[in-house]
Image (cartoon, rainbow, N blue to C red; front, side):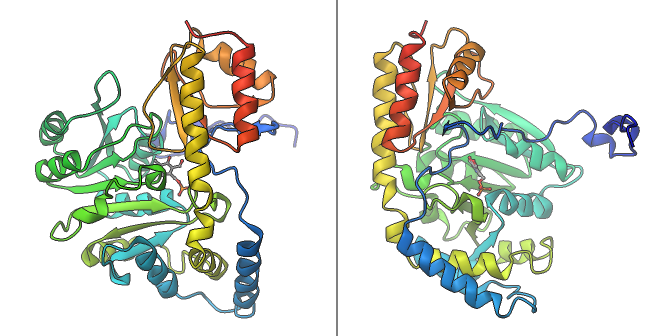
Length: 364
Ligand SMILES: Cc1ncc(COP(=O)(O)O)c(C=O)c1O
């Protein structure tokens, strides 16, 4: 005791993990936390009551291992998603991060590669490298969009084993149209994952990549309950794909990876999808209010189909981030110079952010 502990370098750690830094969005206890794109609205009371009943029931059998195939939950997801999906096309895990990890364990791994259009979700390279796969960063246009021709050409040239299309994209909010996804699928020889973590915040009349699934056995569409469903703390993500892909994921998952309590809670929450999603319109309204107000303050807001806004024109993003922090508002410096990202909160939280931003001066 009292000795200086060893550093990672002193350990016989895998060579390919040396020098890596773990995912580390700050978890500061500030009054207003708008930094990790959570849904800041609590689960409605009537839904929470039902979830509690379901969990209480599951607790009676918690001495037994849970249903390894989480059958009821997969049926719930198939029904929620629609598009004629059936439970043999559904998979779930502890957050979509674990779902994506399963995909990479099955289709990535040593000697293989994964690809995404940068900047994109920061966990993709970490998840890929943790399985021993390399990460290839493609590029986007100045406004963070990517068109079908450029996307297909980049994917064809890189020929990765797994492509990640974050649609809409985190951290930029950028939409991705169905024709880009189709073009990338045709150009790819490997698995194409469309990460629709924020799909519920996109305009309702815009289609999901789920419509492309028939006849495309290398296509995977992932979703999460963490955002629109206000269920981040429960850790539930899922995907839809060809049943053969699901069979491949069974090879790499841990037995009983979804606890009986998680299955019960998520299945109960899904039966209240309409109520759970009630807040989406309110969040979209706050998102659009953020975009309009930061523009009026002299910043540049990027088009967003998500529950957050990336804004540019920030003279010194570290200084602005710190000034907001000091005012009790936590947002995210995503590492894009002169840009910051903020999650749309409740009306009161959003007002607190906008007031704080206004009080620290305008964009460059
Ligand atoms: C694009 C994207 N995918 C996946 C996730 C992971 O979500 P979870 O593991 O909570 O389902 C996030 C979380 O922020 C995300 O932004």
